[in-house]
Image 1 (cartoon, helix red, strand yellow):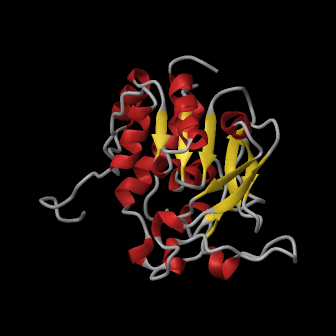
Image 2 (tube, helix red, strand yellow):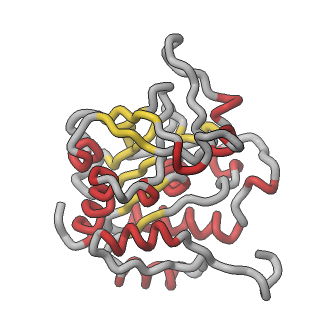
Length: 242
């Protein structure tokens, strides 16, 4: 990205296809740092899906240093934070955060992350064992990629439970970081958990506005009704439905 002739703004097609498949018109916003340009996008677009990617720079939330190769480029990091802050503070637009986008919602409101689940997370229950949340832990095994599944428990009555029409889901998993349960960010509450206590969803707790962060990747599971429903509900909210 430092070479201007090779730098690219990329978005995985699965996000684009999932939004389009739910009836939305997907538009990719490149990482710009001009507040007026971002404000223009906020004015004309109806909803915002915050996607995954490399790790956010830990200095943002008081974390410890990480290897540079794990981290997001500063331009995208700064853009993502600016976009999330403007979205939450200056608009009432629907927001869906997926994986890194879920973590972005957390840190944009003063929350913090567990920087490596494998080395830093202990389940709150002694009976629970830690899961292999990161695809890197499953490399070269039959569970690598989009094969692995684990259960997620949903808070009864929460937005995600209403969307799924259930209080449990089977999800995929591609993350080595997670929102810290004790620092979810101002205005957010946890509404889904993995069996080892890792927070799998957060929701806006200040109104009935659609602001939902989920740690798994539903765009890779759109063959399942309950996963498609996440995008359908998001697109419906962008169209004015609550």
